[in-house]
Image 1 (cartoon, protein in one colour):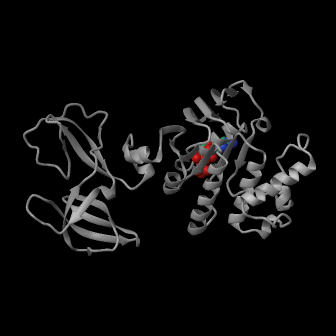
Image 2 (cartoon, helix red, strand yellow):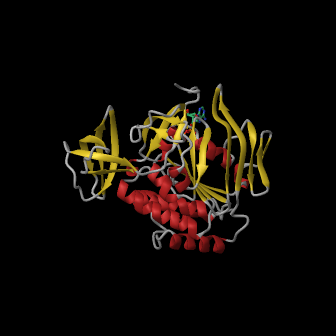
Image 3 (spheres, protein in one colour):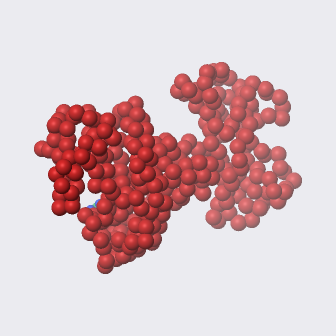
Length: 352
Ligand code: ATP
């Protein structure tokens, strides 16, 4: 397995720049989740790493080896990348054993060695005995496992998974994801998992890279990226987010919906504050010093509930753990118990 270092990568299709001065790195054996909206360039990045696209500028290194530098490019088949494309893409006319063996270099291994590798892979993906089945005789989850085994069978330097679970229903998806991640970890595989799903990214990875418009906006551990977003946009990429107008004051305080009694202090700059719904506590204590509001809606999810509360002119989303103890229409007080994440507006300047 190898580390990965990408520096200043540009890829354009015609006049359209799809990767824009993109840099990203990953240690050997780490699993990264690449999270971003449709069309932001996730697949293009994977294809560039795999050698299926030649970037215009920038460098890609596997460990110390330079595999891509504008004119120079190591061909895809020499990069030892295991690529699991969207929807598995097994060869329909080959049985499971033949699919798994497909990428193995026949000049480097004997028939017996290849047979042994296939056997090991079937054990690894828990499909022993299904060697002779055809892909259309397998469930969606089983097909994804075979696609992963085909990628692992070549003893790759790195595995790239392009939304491998997107065709599966929610329950099967979570189960298979756990199996696949455990499998990758047991093999100490360096891997990149592309996903649209923020929970999938948080739960599966050592590193999350948040991508938008061909750039990595923020990279870090799931906890860092969730708890210390660098902007409202990155916060929204990893979870539900409340964005409130705020002012930074000369006394060091921040004035916002939940802390507005700062009339003597001078405003240094205006901006916004970012709050996670689980960082607001609600109670029935309606004493005069409390911020108060009225519950307008409750979405009950079993393990928790999202409560919408009308406060002043804002609608505030609050996550409370189950079982449910409030009802719509009730008056409650609210308290912000999380960190103050203040982001100044670029053009705010000293305000009055
Ligand atoms: P999704 O999540 O929907 O799969 P993505 O983030 O993987 O999207 P890409 O597939 O990398 O996005 O595509 C990024 C942009 O580049 C899109 O606007 C797409 O239409 C465009 N694009 C991708 N491949 C090509 C190509 N071969 N020729 C021209 N445009 C392309």
